[in-house]
Amino acid sequence: MNTQTIEFIRPVKQSTAPQRWSVPDVEALFKLPFADLMYRAQQVHREHFDPNAVQLSTLLSIKTGGCTEDCGYCPQSAFNSAGVEDRKMLEVEEVVAAARAAQQKGAGRFCMGAAWREPSDEDMASVVEMVKAVRDLGMETCATLGMLNDEQTGQLRDAGLDYYNHNLDTSPEFYGNIISTRDYQDRLDTLDRVRKAGMSVCSGGIVGMGESITQRAGLVAQLANMNPYPESVPINNLVRVEGTPLAQTEELDPLDFVRTVAVARITMPTAFVRLSAGRQQMSDAVQALCFLAGANSIFYGEQLLTTGNPDVEKDRALLDKLGMYPLAEKA
Ligand code: SAM
Ligand code: DTB
Ligand code: SF4
Image (tube, rainbow, N blue to C red; front, side, top):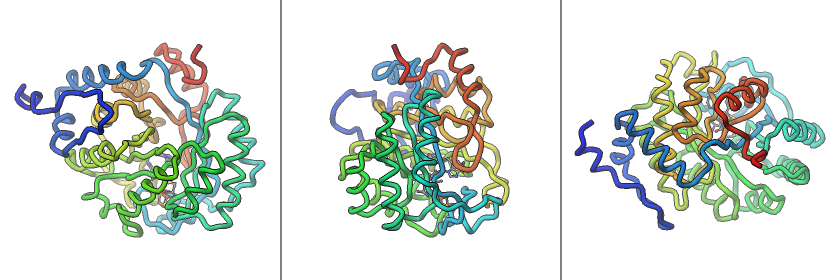
């Protein structure tokens, strides 16, 4: 990378107007020398956040498996044979008990996930009760239930849902290699409805699915050019689950994952960038690099939806070792 390319990248601006990022601009960030990229990311991160505070979200699968969508990465798709046992929706009491336990362990946000293409009216009635009950505990609430219509976004907003998670997953160009049962535009439409209803948007993607750097840059550009960009951006490292079409995908170089976090931080300065799925397979050193790159949120608790996550003691030890602390526990 020569200095000409570095000059070509737009300087970080602090402005209320959204910054438009072209895919080549974002790709140029990906190709910066590692130290330059990390320095830029740290500068942006420190302008907007306490660099030692990390937001903790606990996930719960409220309805597992048997999903009608064909997402190539997902152990819960009925098209895949990952051996995930289908489970009907949990009862409100079970969800509240899990949320209370997560809160006692220090989680600030509780995210309820369901293996649906979209929720039915009956599903919505239960989810609304769950959201209200979790909110009554004093936790931030998040849900990820698939596509939503306007009525459903209104119901969730009225129940007090703080964040709705719906990932773009990858770039528009690579998307068709991974999913065929719904379009990229469907995802953008749901995010638009969530935004219009007045909830905060949580949207990110997965890296390590065999996409090119340009396609990885395409995902980040899509997210960063949303107006406004998401408040929360989960960056997932593909969990290669046996029985899914992506199980044999070549493992991503961990430094490329770190680069993705840094680029997300630079292009979405005020977003919480979450170091999401794939942490169980990551060394402490790589996770520390992700925090340096501007990640300031993690999934917390030994289970993601169907796959594992580091246990609470391990994460506490890591945060202690790095002199970091949960956002909710900040003095
Ligand atoms: N069914 C809903 C949907 O897809 O919108 C919500 C749940 S779905 C499991 C939420 C997200 O989890 C997906 O969009 C994807 O980004 C992520 N995910 C699923 N399987 C994954 C895997 N094996 N590795 C990394 N991320 C994964
Ligand atoms: C997100 O971006 N990652 C989470 C959450 N949003 C719902 C899900 C990760 C799932 C990993 C595979 C599994 O555990 O089934
Ligand atoms: Fe279903 Fe969501 Fe998994 Fe896709 S990612 S198969 S929509 S649970």
